Length: 410
Image 1 (cartoon, rainbow, N blue to C red):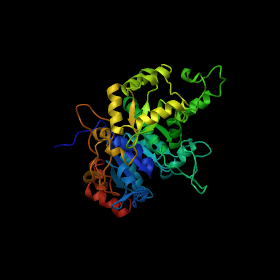
Image 2: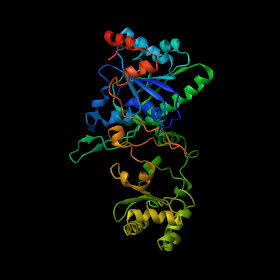
Image 3: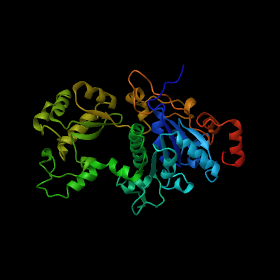
């Protein structure tokens, strides 16, 4: 059985990446693009970074570089630079996923590559971007989240400050938004024949991902005669986003018999359905609330009633109940337990370790009536050097041997 072709079949991307920013092309490879990772002879040290390490390779590498091909070139050699230019000549895009200007120092910046391929799309992804006072600061992924206000400091029992557990935003949002920009640029370049250069900062993406809270605080700088809270809160301004959910009652987490569930009856219709469903119409009669966006904030008497009610059933029973009576309920999972959730099992079947050396999640876009290709495992350094040079550039064995003899090809 032949592998299905992806949506980006025929799109070729040349990637020069170190560490996490290489995820900018993972999405494109998952969708079928031919992503050629050009790395130094010793390889990208992402293979040894973070945890876990699976049979000698980091999970970070195994996931981020799945479905890509590796060519190991020494760009300190003029022969290596020339091979890179030849690869770019037939490519749609070149990705610089490292400090801005790294490729230009090797004579492989946007202007250099545009000279050999006028329709090339050149994208740089970095920590803080190419401008601003932080542009040259060394950093790691969590920095973009703390900068963007995503990670409040926490303190342990001895009073020491620590980084609390959180979902990383910048290192995921930056590559995702960057890949969207790359595809848009490729579409225009194929139509017009003109490429472009673009850049994205993972810090910018982390801030943009939290636009709702950031823009709310900005709106609150205006007088209350212009910007108020919601009618259900008597127009009182509450803290932005989920920061204003702590006092919620009809929109809150509750403990069940075996875990927790999220209750979301902020609309009057859903609240009424819940009360009638549990045989407590009296709760609705006493506290009907507003039609929309009513969380019954700070109503401790009602919260105590609901706390007792939710402890009477298991989480799965509450999910079934919410679906049956039409009131929003959601499981409260952890990164460890979510794999046992039936919705997860239906929507995100593991790609097996036999395929990728470890179980990994599939790309979360589904085609109707057809399948996306299943990615191949992440490459070893230079694993596809001969294959790419012969298949893509048409080099014969003697020319490949000469490059290896010159030290340009690992």
